Image 1: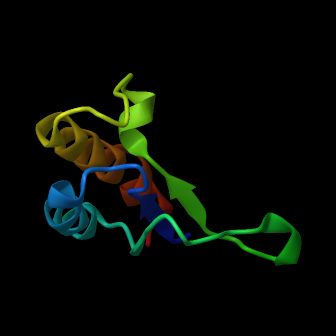
Image 2: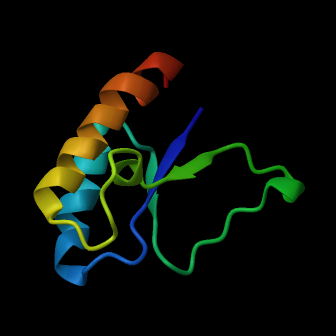
Length: 82
């Protein structure tokens, strides 16, 4: 399974750092605001903002978001074998 990190509604100055952390955590791609995924046409990948699962909002500081990306990679992506 491939995992996509959506970084919509995120300050532009955080995008590069979040994308690098996503790659290090095992995400296969990132999705920016104009990216659309539609299950009804056979999409099999996931899109997530892992910091939401940790109770962080869109306006959270980049440090906690980075921690959430790493945690998601360690706990979820690593178990998929991709």
